[in-house]
Image (tube, rainbow, N blue to C red; front, side, top):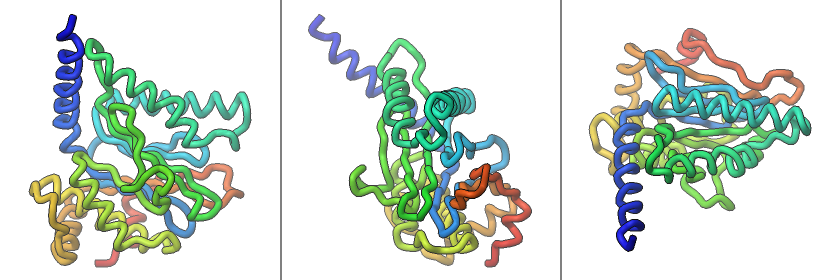
Length: 259
């Protein structure tokens, strides 16, 4: 009996190591607040990683497609139920994450005889003004995090998601230096592409300590854009719009990219 707590701790450590290894190759996702909304962006060739959740809320995720879909549907159902029983204005990202998704993911992670969620998620809620935007990252163990700050001091103008902590932190460092929330869409698009490049370079090279020089980032971005597609979506800030989320086409984004 005395050994049981230690076995549980060991099982949790092994489970964490396994999940981290499974997520390590996930293509980074950048989410940036700008003057007219919030931009979600990643590059890839196959699976969808960016989704609408409800009204002013969107999600980006990496991990197993089945687990991402289960969590996406759970988030949509929870938000829709809240909106139906109360009102659409009462649906908030904080409530959705803190009282619903996080406890479910924590419980699944700690039940060592069951399967955990192989997923890492990034949520954003667009506000009426850029300073009211909210970004929350939810880890596979239910941990809720913000963009490199405490919850009370959360940055509200960008967030990043990647396969490893080091890659994500490099992306956050880049965006902290390069991005401003009052910028226009084209500038936000370029910053998101460069942040993705910084994160993906770190994953591929294993160099997670030094920020790559700008010329290397631009070269890498051009090479990747030649072989992969852009997946992106925006949450529009204009409250008069009936539908806030809009998926963006690869073709329309490429027309705005100027090297």
